[in-house]
Each structure stands twice: as structure tokens, then as C-alpha cells.
Figure 1 (tube, rainbow, N blue to C red):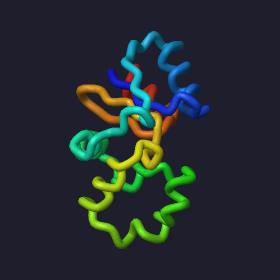
Figure 2: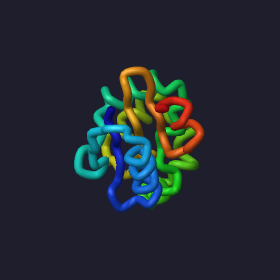
Figure 3: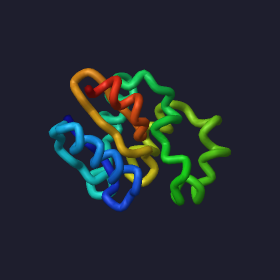
Figure 4: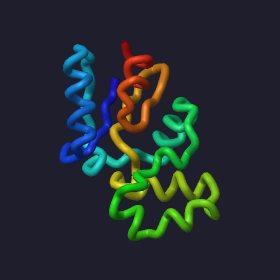
Length: 116
């Protein structure tokens, strides 16, 4: 299992502590140092079953600086994937990638249902 996070993020720390507490082994990847590629994002989006907008870190500074709240509705999916691939700080985290599913953001009940 791959755990993608930003180490300074309190939600990511809480999510990793949850994984550790449940004995779930994982490889950790720093989203700022190793941004997801467009190909990875497309694969994860398909596996997650979530709307693409859920992959955006809507509370991030870069999201706000780029005025994406206003711009996203007019963007195509291809444009959104390309934009997400430019900077890990645009991507919602943490992300858990397994063979079966992709979880975006930390919702404990959702993680319990998918991982336990």
C-alpha cells in the first residue's frame, strides 16, 4: 500500500498514526517532493470512483492563489489532470493507494471500511 502525504500536514500525521495503530504497513511518499504524475492521477481517479474535484486541495494556498474555485468549473478534465500534475500542493492529501481502491483525504469511517 502507498501512503501519499505532506509530512507537515496535521491530517496526514493523524492518518499515518491511524495506519500504524491498526498495524497497516505502507510505503510513504512525500507529495511535495514527488508529485503524482498525470498518469498516476488518471489511474487513481478511475480507481477511486470520486469526482475529479475531490482530488484538489481546496484549502491550500496555491489553490487560492490560482483562483481555482472560479476557474475549475470551466476547465476540461484533461486540463484539470495536467494542472494537478504540476504541483503536489494542489493535490488533496493524504492519499492511500491499494490494489483495489484509492482513498483521498482522511475520513476514519471510510478508511475502516476499505482497509480493515
